[in-house]
Length: 291
Image 1 (cartoon, one colour):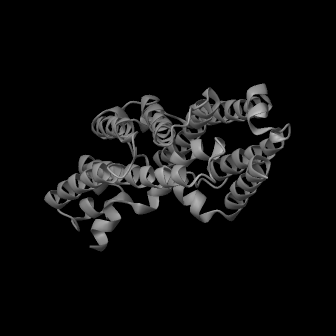
Image 2: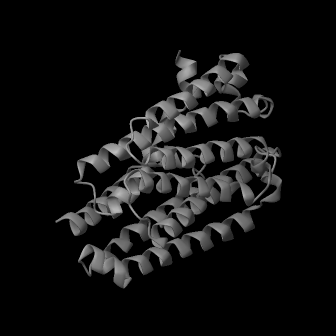
C-alpha cells in the first residue's frame, strides 16, 4: 500500500492549487459555492494527474532503472508490478470522473478540460517530452488548463493577464527544473532525460533569465492596468510586485547557486524563504482585494 501511495505522488497535488487562482483573483474566496466547486475541481484534477504519474512511471521504467535516484520509484524498483500500475492508473482516472459528478451545471466543460489534460499528458509521457522546448511548453500549458478548469467550474471569466502569467511562470519553473538535469549530465556524463543533450547551461540560463524577466513585466503590467485597478478598486496592487521579484530572484538563486531546482514542489514545501515570500504576497493581495 505504501508503494501504491508513492506511485500516485500526492505530494505533487500542490500543483493543482492553480485551479483556485480564478477564484482568488476574481474576488470570490468568500463565496462558498465557488469555493466548494474549486475544491471538487482540485481533487478531480489531482486524481487525473495521479493517473498520468502512473503512466509516466510505466513509460520511463527502463530509463528510471538506470537513474541513481529514480531507480527507487515503485515500478522501477519492482515494488509495484506493471499490472498494478495500470490498474491504479485506471482507478485514478475513474475517480477523477466520479468526483466531477459532484459539480453543478459546468461539469461537462470541466470534464472536457481535464480529459484534454489527461490525453495531452499521456502524449507527453509517451513522446512529447523527448523534444526540447516542446516539453517545457506542454508542462506550462498544463497549468493553463488548471486555471481554465477552475474558471469554468466557478463561471469566472479569465483575463488575458492570468493566462499569460500562469504560462510564463510555469515555463520559468520548467526551465529551472531542466537546468538541474543539465548539471547532472555534466557531472555524470549521462543524460537524465532523452532530450537533455539538446540543452546546455548557456541556453538554460538565458531561458530562465528571459522567462523570469517577462513574467515580472507581465505581472507589473497586470497590477497597473486600468481594468484591474477598477475591478479591485485599488491603485496599490503594484506594491505586490516586490514579492514577485523576490520570489523569482530566490528561485534563480536556488537554481544557479544551490543547484536545487530539480523539483519545484520540494522547493515550495521545504524552502522557508520561498514560503515566507509566497505567504507575504498572498496576504498583501488578500488585504488589498478583500479588506
